Amino acid sequence: PTPYTFGQDPIPGVNLYRNTKAKFVMANGGNSLPCAMAKYNAKTGQFIHITSDSEFSPMIRETRVIKK
Image: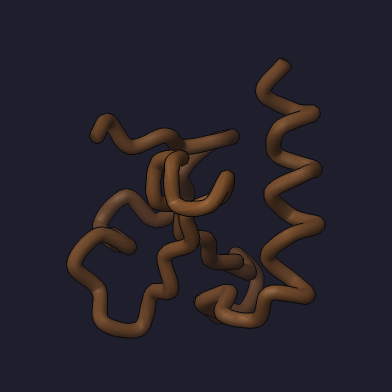
């Protein structure tokens, strides 16, 4: 699948694909494309993988609104 990046990528050298710390989720009972997320703080350089469903779901909804 073609990877989608929303917004500007501040760390182009970091990939979630094939990263063992990344959690991929497939919506619609597994019929949607796999999706993984991470947060990056440009001020501190902190990179956080999003692994909890309670944080992942709202971020996906926000991203869908941005995409439209």
